[in-house]
Image: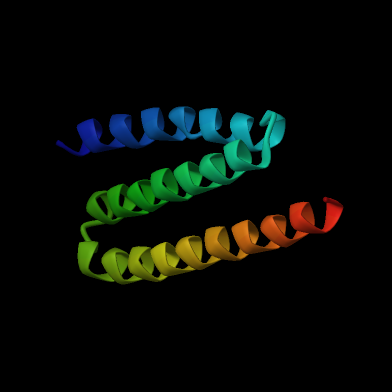
Length: 90
């Protein structure tokens, strides 16, 4: 079972490159924000899988909840920042 979770974690790490590509190359600010949010969600899942692998899921759930709050606050802050930047150009 441990090898299954390790394989899923490895596949999720590779899949994590797709949102990072969208953040890097996104044609619009909205695409970059969605990519950042998706990368944060996939990272959150990866942290939980690592918790399962180390058999310390209770500790890693706390870490992932803190990371989820930081991810949410970061995306909201970036969206407000880009909203004021685009409003100033008009």
